[in-house]
Length: 545
Image (cartoon, rainbow, N blue to C red; front, side):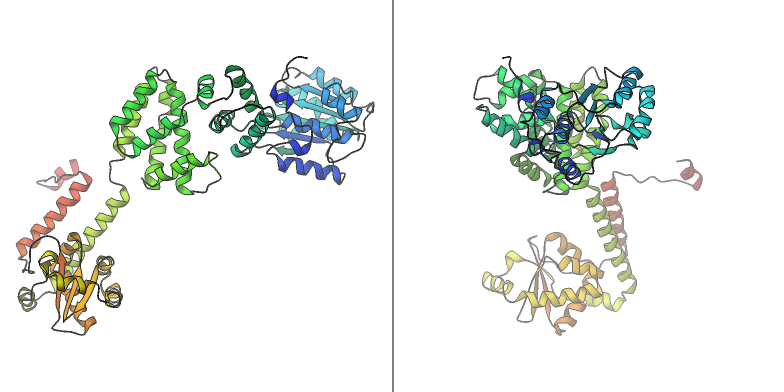
């Protein structure tokens, strides 16, 4: 007996054996059970997911000698004839090679006759979208009002090419791509039954290459079995199918996110030297970047069909950049698709793209820039408002106030260490409550501060940046006032502990220094955005610029 390929040998013969299409099989079984069988059905979906197989199982269930039943027995003469493909009551036609009006006229003539053995005459037309317009028109009347013993089952991969007049006369059943994990389990079961030794990683490579089609997966498995001797390894799959090692794809993603341009370029050189298809690598890289984006949005997303170890690694990568940045990378990848596909030097285009992505990772995110701008605006607003409210008398008081800034290293260990640990929470909570009401900017600075109160002294441990912000003349006046009111101690001393190694007092800031500080603020804004100051002699020059 000639060899029977795995796709035919393991073709499902009952509804229960159909993989990944439970929504279809359950609906058809209920239709048989409650005698609500439609006279025309349209099976649409990707290739190799079971459309024609389900059509044959439905024909067997309807014409089974023990039926109609929700499962064919596969033992009676009718079931065996349909399985072997020579039943007189089940007519299968390929719409691609029999697409003319003459074939449809023949069907119209034959539907008048009763079935020879079974209950129904079943017409299965595969790739029905290939029929001509005239053939569809000739089928309309018969399809709308067929004899009660006739059932039409159409199968197609492109339902959008079928006229709406045909679709409206059918019940539509959308078949789905088989999920990767379901496909993996089915392949693992078949290889176990066939006593084929194969690695799990190799099975996952077959699943990825099959793209959700069980027939394609079994055909690839047949090809791999002929190529290599057991145990079948992942390297064998990559060699015969020309697949990329996912490890290289992950290394490129990691190099881009780590801003390692040298490593990125060397990886592309390695791929090119091994003779790999650059365009295929770009496709795989884009696919995995899409997976990375989905995992960033939802770590447990059902939209990514990958092994658990690959999903875990993508979750690690997703922590390196914010969602907006990963989306920008993905957008740049998609924009280069046309250039890589049409270029005679796709390697150069890919190198340029990945260098751009690696360098793009160095840029400051727009969220950070906006945060800096908001902070600078708050400082300028508070400083200017307090400058206007200060009188000469208050300025003298600020100048004569005790030392407010001290180096933490200059304080005795026996005093600072215990004081920092002595009941800081109630004091901090009370101050935060006050400043959130009076000055939210100071409250934000105190969020991460460490406070302690001992012997009439309030110690506040801040970072150097926050300490520099507090020393602003207007901010310090507000800060000192509300601290004393909150603590109910007018003579309390406030010490800000920093790590700058110097002990400073808060000096009076002359007007010239205030202007200088405003100019420094302008310079910092220009530095963030890479701008410049342009001077004009009159309005006309500004308009022309």
